Length: 234
Image (tube, rainbow, N blue to C red; front, side, top):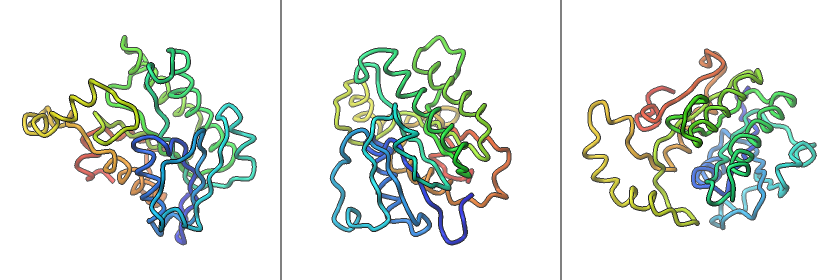
């Protein structure tokens, strides 16, 4: 579990929208005393003060060889910000590997190597029985992570993510442009569907990592989009 003098973190998915924000925030957070990043491709450029941080270690490796790549890594908190699209992955099978296979493998690594906590990004609507492929895969990922038996597992389910991506997504870009109007219209029971900024999701995960063990009950916790946007549940 996180220690009073700070925790050691492992982050997978640092090149993504939320993952990169989380990377930057963890480098600035004194409670995170060391940060190991597992990445398949080069990280985006960091500002000078963050790039020179002595607590950052980057391991470049194919996630299919995760166990070997992380052989000498120790972590108290494991962050999983992995995610892709079918278009980017190239097929449903490749999508399942990134959004299901790799997060579960990371969870198994965390369990085997004594990590006290894992915090993983899922998605609003995740349901292992859903007729929607994307939601079904996210639901299966949650179910399989929960079955591993981690000491503490926190699953975060954001709605539409606001932020600048490297790749162009037409539907998402249109929704982002309309997000001020959507937020205005989404009142009452619709508030839980409001778009959320990537940096706010990252901040939520970062604060969840610092919670002491006695506030982690039950072992598996799921935070929906409303919890993220209000940040009152942690």
